[in-house]
Amino acid sequence: MLFQKSAARSFPTHNSYQTFRHVLGRVVVCTFARWEPVGDKPLKASTLYRVAAILLLLFAIGHTLGFRQSDPHWGVDTMLASMRSIHFDVQGSDRTYWDLFLGAGFSVGVLYLFAALLAWQLGGLPPQALRQLRPVGWTFAFAFAALTVVSWLYLFIVPVIFSAAITVSLASAAWLSSRKSVTV
Figure (tube, rainbow, N blue to C red):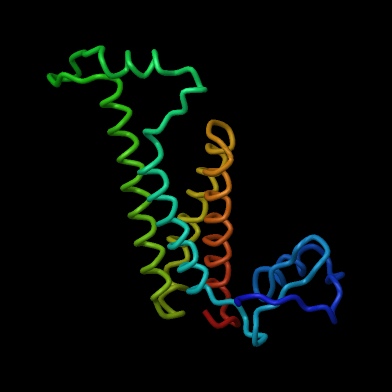
């Protein structure tokens, strides 16, 4: 088990910045309980990058398998049939809106897979390399923060949860990798 409940300690009463640093560097704080890593070891950036990689892989698989699905209760069968049947010329290629939809959906799946491989590779780097790659880590985290906002505005709860969890993992890893005093 990665985390266990610490009943002997209470919720930290530091100012918000110290609590934020404490949460990212040592523990995950729930609303009224404090959870500590087993063995009281600090959480490493490499572990968080690997967690993000696994979440990204699951997200890629779920998206690739699920984006073409529809529920008859949605009442979109007629619209989907017209997306599949109406052909038009796009720069010399005969396409349907369904073709464009599939191309965009598979492209997103490939990009999620690329992001999973990138996160996995970042998780395998030594601490000094992660410190030198701070801009890459933060850019990665900000990109998924933007994706979380887009998911919130235009999609549904599953992509919002995945995007938010990936953003937290990537931002925490980027923050930890930029600290000189913490083992990465």
